[in-house]
Image 1: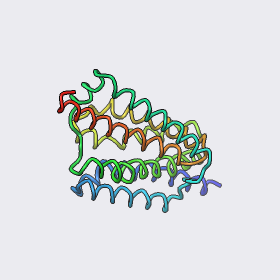
Image 2: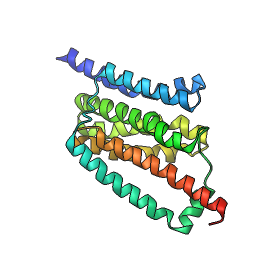
Image 3: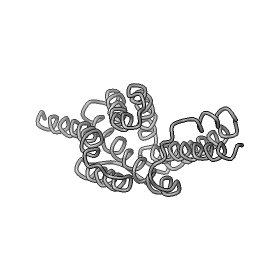
Image 4: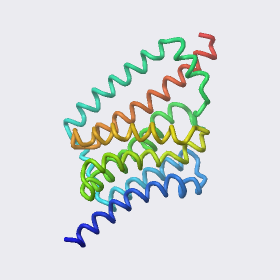
Length: 216
């Protein structure tokens, strides 16, 4: 029994430490462009999921329903925000984080395959079940999202964003995504919501800048 418990704890520890080392140390050291990073992230996520035994359950009916409903609300809210002149002005004045590819490629390829899918595969489909098995559901709902927050340290530093607020915000998002994963018995709902949030952010920011350049 103790050997089995030790094995569970070892897998959970690996699921925490490997992503942090990957995103904050190993991947930055490779010096890849956005296309290379997208391919590397997806490969790493698939490797972790296979090696550690992920439970994505992509065909969860509840996941599809919840994910589509929440995504529709997020998209509608984002569209409504773009109609507010003050919001458009704030978005247009924000630092330009657009990557070195066309916006269409960024939204269609790199957000889904380089961010939403790999992160949900790593943190919800793989890490959350392992932590829940090893430590119980409540500690897992703290440690998993916090690990997700710490995953963003390098990207925040590289973008010039404040690190602690970034960790806090992404940890809070991780709690929401993990709760969705548990309630819908699959990773499809958090993946859809994650994808919609990031895509909506990219779309409204790009649109606000275009309108500002046209003087509207």
